[in-house]
Structure formats: structure tokens, C-alpha cells
Image 1 (spheres, rainbow, N blue to C red):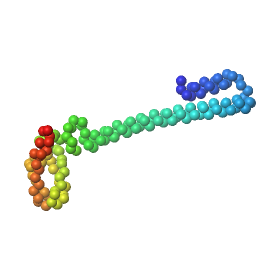
Image 2 (cartoon, rainbow, N blue to C red):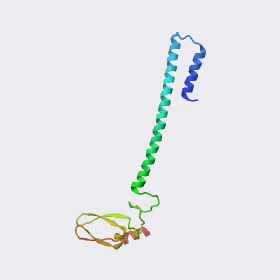
Image 3 (cartoon, one colour):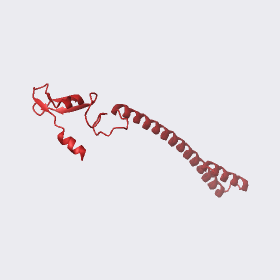
Image 4 (cartoon, rainbow, N blue to C red):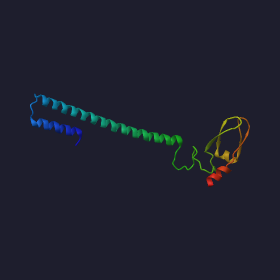
Length: 143
């Protein structure tokens, strides 16, 4: 039984008592029952609004999850901690992108997995030879 139904039941009990509606006590009780009915109606409206908002929040959460998957290109199968969908061994990772900062000029250079596999590149900004050594990385991953 809902609160509104219970308030209506109480109203019916009062009407069944056939009380003198002109007495002060009955006027107070009628005012209390009127207030109770109004509160029950307000609570029902609030519950409906909360249910609607909860549905909207669920939709927003689903949309945000989809956007995150698209933006971050998440597929759930990565074991790699980098921001791309590559393998840990850097082999055949032409689509994988990495950023390196040149220690000489401070330029940020975007590299592919294939460029890293070559072992070194020439900085396009200053011509400095940048070498990449993965021996330490591979020793850590084997442990």
C-alpha cells in the first residue's frame, strides 16, 4: 500500500466516523489529514522526478563510457601501460605513437614503434642524434 493510499484510507476512516465537522478537534484532524495527503502527493512527485533523473544519469553514463572508449580507443585487451593500443615488445607497431623530448633543444618529437625499433633518430629541430636503448626495459619486463 502506497503512502497516498494509506492517507486515503485514513480519510475514509474519518469520514466513516461521522464526526461533527464544526468541532475544533475535528477541524484540526481534518487539517492534519489534508496536510498528510498533500505531503504524500509531493513525495510521489519527488519519487517520479528522482526516477526520471536516475534514468537520465544512466544514459549520460553510458554515453560518456562510449565517448571514452572512442576517444581513448579502449578495447579492454591491452596489457600495455602506454596511451596507445600497441604490444609491449614494440614489434610491428607502426600505428603506435610515442613522444620524446630532445635533451638538446627541448623539442617534442612524435615517434612510431618502427622508428623506435631502429634504435636512433636525428632530431629534426637541432640535428642531435637521439638513441633509444631498450635493454633495461626488456630486462625489467622479463623479471
